[in-house]
Image (cartoon, rainbow, N blue to C red; front, side):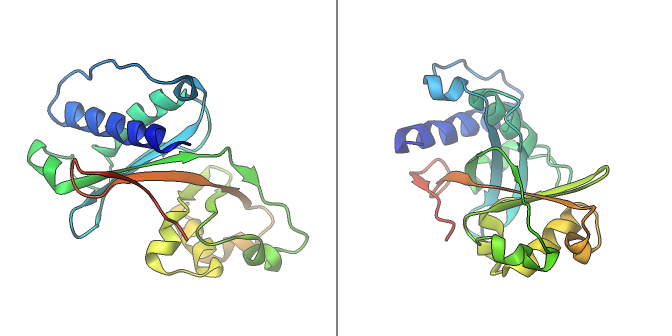
Length: 197
């Protein structure tokens, strides 16, 4: 994804967040053809300057055109059930981050103990799936927390509502994906490409 497309993705998310928080309709705007292709996307809100999570919602699968996925994720991030709804007075105290995802691919390894060696911290995001249980962690999460591959797998299991060691069980399906990340350097500020490694 080019820098200007990444900047557009973050600006779209910011406009959707501003409109959602103030109970306004979002303006329509032209997007390049790449934004009409289906893609997974997540929008993350963090407090500024502390960088504490304030909301993160998204779509791991390419079910919506990218522009729609970003708008829906941005609106959803304002109402992340883990937090109170975002208020208008918080808009200049949060930074917006957009992650554009590759389609998830199931990880196939001979022995479950080999799974950690198949995961590259900073490159791969994880989805754990077992029956109705499903949890996702973006590639930037283990970098931010300083996790190794084993801890990343355990945390992804817990995000899915599973015991931490359930990644060792063959009934648990493990998917990896990658993401291109763009974020505001400060509220309404310069848009930067995120580094995960």
